[in-house]
Amino acid sequence: AMDSGVARLPITNWELYEQELQERIGADQKLMNRITSQAKKNPKTVVFAEADNYKILKAAQTVNDQRIANPILLGNRKRIQEIILENNLNLDGVTIIDPFEEDAKREEYAQMLYIKRQRKGLTLFDARRLMRDRNYFGSMMLNTGEADALISGLTRDYSKTIAPALQVVGVEEGINKVAGMYIILNKKEPYFFADTTVNVNPTADELVDIIGLTARAVRFFDMEPRVAMLSYSNFGSVQGDIPNKAAEAVRKAKAKYPNLLLDGEMQANTALNRQLLREHYPFSELAEKGANTLIFPTLTSGNVAYKVLQELGGAEAIGPILMGMRKPVHILQLGSSIRDIINMVAIAVVDAQNYNNQHI
Ligand code: ACO
Image 1 (cartoon, rainbow, N blue to C red):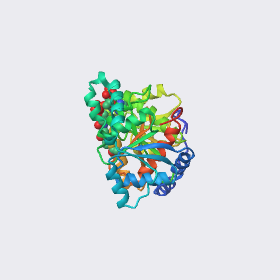
Image 2: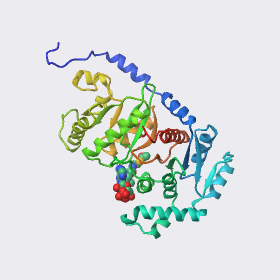
Image 3: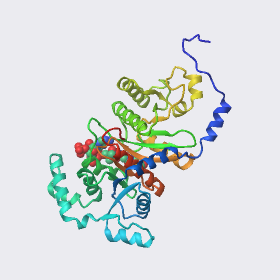
C-alpha cells in the first residue's frame, strides 16, 4: 500500500462529502458576530466619503445606534439632510462635514497634499481643486488622525475611488501592492478569496505579496490560512503563462513564508475538494484539510468567482476588504447592500483598533 513512498491519507466516502456540500449552503454568522462585538468594545471614528446616499445613511444610523462606530458624514449638507428627512432617519448628533463649507480645512489639506506630491507632478492649484473631491478630503482626514477609518465607494467605479486613497493614504511600510479580499461565508467554515479587486494581472512576485497579505488578513480573522494558488492546471499538468506564473509564485512564496500552509498551482475544485486531493494529489500539503484561502492568478478570475458565488452560490460575500493600506480604508463595491456596509464598518473599526500590531 505504501509502494510509492507517499503516505496516503484515508479516503472518506463521496456521500459524506456530498452531504457536507449540502450543509454548506447558507451563511454562518459566527465570524461577523465576533467582529461586531469586538468593534463595540472600542468604537472608532469612521468617515463615510459618499454620505449623500440613502444606503450609506441607513448603515451609518445603524452603526451609530449600535455603538459599532462614530460616523462622520462627508458630502453636500443640504442633500444629506434631505435624505435623512425623506426617509425618517435619525442621525441626531452625528457630525456632517461638507467639504465645500470648509475653506480653511481644504486649504490646510491642499498644502499637505502638495508637500506630499509636489515631486509627483502635483501643483498647488491641482491640490486645492482635488480637496473638493470627498475621496481626497476624506483620505486627508485619515492622514491627520481626524478619523480612524475611511469607507468610500458605492456610487462610483472602484478604480476611481481607490486612486485617491492610494495617492493620499498610501501603502503600509514594507508592502509593495495592496490587494482586495472577500470572505465567503457558508454554513461551514469561512473561505477567503484574493485578489478580487485591485491588481489586474499580478506578476509572480506580486502574487507572493498577495499571498503574504492574505495570510495575514486570514489570521486577523482568527483563522489559520490554508492557501491554494489557483490556475486552470494542477501541479504542472499544463504549461502556459498563467500556470507557470502561479507555479513560480508558489515556489517563491514557500521560500518566503516557510511556516505557511500553501500549495499549487491547482484548479479551484482541487483546492476545495480534499477528496479529490487525497485521491489524485496525496503529496499535496493541502490534502489533509483542503484550502480555505484561494489566491487567484488574475483579477478577472477572482472578481468573477466571488460575484458568481454571491449571486448564485447561496453564500454571503463580505468585502471588499482592502489589505496593506497604511491606514484602514475600505472601498465598497457598486451596489453593496446596507448589510454589506455595516459589515465593512465593523471590520474597519476592528482593523483600526489593531493598527499598531496585527491588522489587515
Ligand atoms: N498597490 C499599491 N499601490 C498602488 C497599486 C497597488 N495595487 N496600484 C497603484 N498603486 C499606486 C501607484 O503606484 C501610485 O502611486 P504614486 O502616485 O504615489 O506613485 C498611486 O497608487 C496612484 O496610482 P494611479 O496612477 O492614480 O493609479 P493606477 O493607474 O496605478 O491604477 C488602480 C491603480 C486604480 C488600482 C488600477 O490598478 C485599477 O484600475 N485596478 C482595477 C480596479 C478595478 O476595476 N477593480 C474591479 C472592480 S472592483 C469590485 O468589483 C468591487
